[in-house]
Image 1 (cartoon, rainbow, N blue to C red):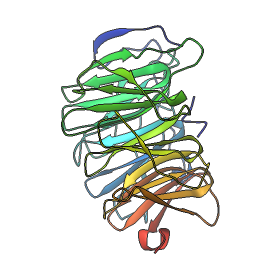
Image 2 (cartoon, rainbow, N blue to C red; image 1 turned 90 degrees about the vertical axis):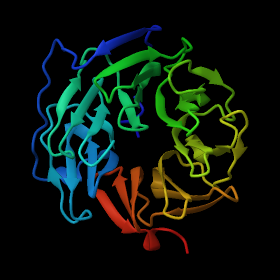
Image 3 (cartoon, rainbow, N blue to C red; image 1 turned 180 degrees about the vertical axis):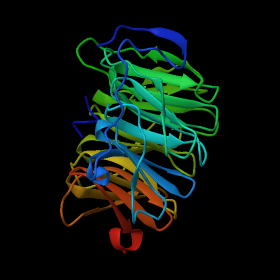
Image 4 (cartoon, rainbow, N blue to C red; image 1 turned 135 degrees about the vertical axis):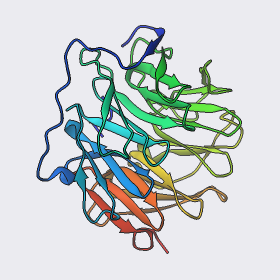
Length: 320
């Protein structure tokens, strides 16, 4: 978690990519055990699974996790998140304000942005469709694009001067309402997702590490000390879902039956029935923390805090 959790003045500007950095990035080293590094984000590119992690390592698997191939990556900065808009086109982000793009399903990557002196860490990247996407990060950074990533508009959301307002995730509804979650319990909302993010009341003062849009359009947010809340009215009001854990909850995905699977420190697994707003708590027997989860069919890919990725059948992972 320390890799993901790392004050800027208020800023707002538009820039065209690629950006020119004063210091050229160095390519990630190809290492014999690339699939054993610490990974922080995973996504699917068609039938391919792609994972990004420390020292710029990106790996992909075309055989459901049986074997992994390291990609050619032009940076050594730690990568925190990855997303694909289709089977070939995707984006990855990370430390040094790095943003990468691939057009071949993650086999090779090019640099869109690299700012080693900025101290900006991009913590997540999400796309609504092939054109509209967001990147969020440290010190209130929120970037968004409406042209498939060719140009990005950056804004720094309002921050208090006594803490760094890292934004960890962003989610949206079909009607355009968009929610960004940050540390210290801060929530931001835009009614149309195209700007005008304003802080809204939060049900908890501790940090939020993730947000999901459920199949019924409700928002689900999760974070420190096992806190999970659901909102069915775009964040105007929130209902707590008891989890019976105080472990940090770090990532989540939607299960085939519509439930949410949330993972975190201590090997914690929280399965949320979003209809009844109840949760079932389990944990991995080895107690190893989970940085990220990706559900593909009837399997879950877990990125271990100690390194590597494990694929486990949902039937074996979840309570019956």
